[in-house]
Amino acid sequence: MNQPQTKESGIIKTVTYEVLRYEPAKDRAPRFEKYHVPVTKGMTVLDGLLWIKEHTDHTLSWRSSCRMGVCGSCGMFINGLPRLACNNQIVHLHSDRITIKPLPNYDIIRDLVPDLETLFEKHRAVKPYLIRKDKEEQSHPAGEYFQTEQELVSYIQFAYCIKCGLCLSACPTAGTSQNYMGPQSLTQGWRYALDSRDEGAAQREAEIFSEHGVYRCHFAGACSQVCPKGVDPALAIQLAKKDAFLRSFGRRKQRPTASVAPPVQNWVPKADIPKAPEPTVPQKNR
Amino acid sequence: MRESRLWSWHIISAVIILAFLGIHMIIMHMGAIWGALGTGSGHPVRSDEVFRRSQQLFFMITYILLLGAALFHGLYGLRSMLCELSLSRILEKAIGGLCAAAGCALFVYGSYVAVAVYRMGEMRP
Amino acid sequence: MQNRLKNRLGLWGWLGGGRYGVERYAYALHRLAGLGILAYFIMHIFVTGARANGPEQWERTMEFFQTPFFKAGEFLVFLAFAYHAINGIRLILVELAFMIGKPGLPAYPYSYSTLRQRPLLIATMVIAAVLMIIGGADLYLAIK
Figure 1 (tube, chains in turn yellow, brown, orange):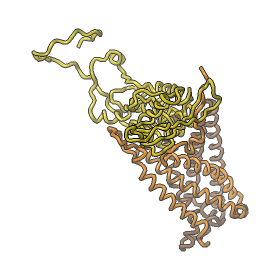
Figure 2 (cartoon, one colour; figure 1 turned 30 degrees about the horizontal axis):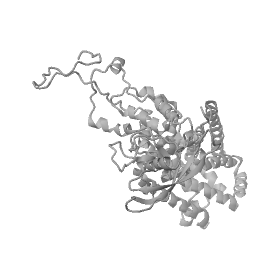
Figure 3 (cartoon, chains in turn red, yellow, blue; figure 1 turned 90 degrees about the horizontal axis):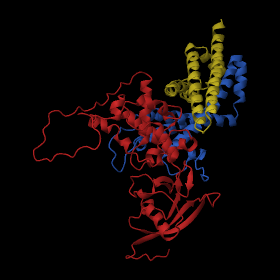
Figure 4 (tube, chains in turn green, yellow, cyan; figure 1 turned 90 degrees about the vertical axis):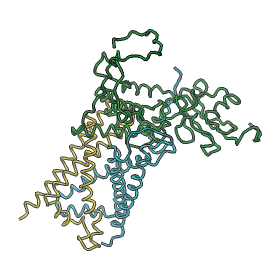
């Protein structure tokens, strides 16, 4: 588009978007299409796609939602790396040609929309929820768990995963193996093993330490390189391997499990605080 | 878990190989340098050198250890690579079995050679 | 369901597939070297088995392998061994969670395991290069 690059228009430059298109109803094979996008200050790759949809080609499809790097929807292969489109400014790519392809290692539904179902299946397979031996306590929690700051820091980094799927795109093993669990699910499985509130490590072992689990990781480190939230899945996987190695020589101590906080006894409310409304959910006696 | 044990042995065999193959390389692949420096003949592959080493107990035992460790390490690595190619479960199990069988067969042959050459030295007056 | 398009990188993904860090290529080279060493090793078991037939058979076998072609092949195998062994030391350390840091609270710009072990990677590459030079000197330069 020939918009003037004036101070008033705010346009710094014009870049060329080369987007891999695939419409299953029409195309047999994917094809590249070029668009010229004017760039203003602070414009992200996602903003550019929205501009194209608004002004040039309304048929271009992709997933996006929060536009601020927390929902994990807009993962795409941009200029040689899997990235979140909303998390990368066009000027920070240092190129006048922005090449966008759908995330590798996932089937393509259409244009830039990957089929992330395999990612979610593998995630479900590691049982990504707290498991307690006391089933009654798990279904009807009586109170909060005690956990120290140190215990929190040992796993909280891995809990920041937004399930964007960039790590599986980057992983070379996931490139050839459809059975490999992948950095995302292995990290989430190990996140629960590290969590002192969890007692279900034995239930996840069969998946995490299977022949398609952590041992098919060979530390290419690409997953940690592309993770937009600093989760560092490679670290979690190597910690899991170290733990299993030490356990096979019987040299691993069981970590203590977080206990449930007892109900507060003998408390008296301050006089000027109004009474709370009645609970709408059935309560156990505290 | 089975896979955990196999992988732990993969690491341990790597350390064993580092030690014994390191010695092997220092003898065989720096032999000419040792010769140029004055220590050693400079021809580690000559038959008198080879048979002198092969008929020492230390070398016989370490050859067999190195053979076992290297076969396990190499064939586990090969099986690991092949199992990352999206093959069916039956094929993966078959590859594992083949690697185990080939490893055992090669180990038996290699150990037989090591022991036979060692015993040649015992039988000489 | 309309036809989904397969988009797996496949074996080309082992060789590259993007602007990834050097560790990803180190991994591919490690595998290639390992395969080469395995192939050579299996042949080596049979070739050195010749010594079971006595010193004369051994000398004949060794003479067969003295041509420049086989000498170059031996040098290639030594290069593969040097790289695989030294990179392997790095992998043993890293895969047992040494030198990659501990979990913490991520703050942008993120520090992660791949970056933290990079000095170790550089050190191993230098050591491997030194070993390769020594091996080359032994095969081609040392006066016999």
